[in-house]
Picture 1: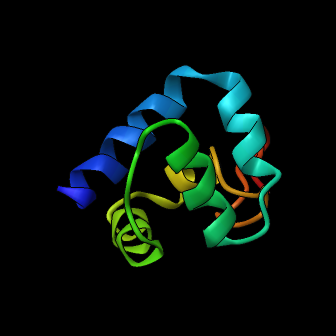
Picture 2: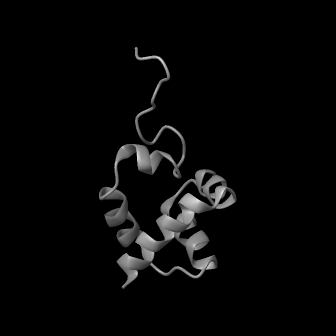
Length: 77
């Protein structure tokens, strides 16, 4: 159930630019989970990590601090 909550939270992030910006400003997993709890989602940092492992680096970089995933360039290097 909590794993499903984490997945639902990631779907909500994609639709809320303010939430996405707030999450990019977080520096640790506990802060990330706390923001999710404020919005009614309940999961642990371990469940968060499991959900992140199922995502591509580009998906993760979309809402976690810039530089976590590989950067994409407009012009190939």
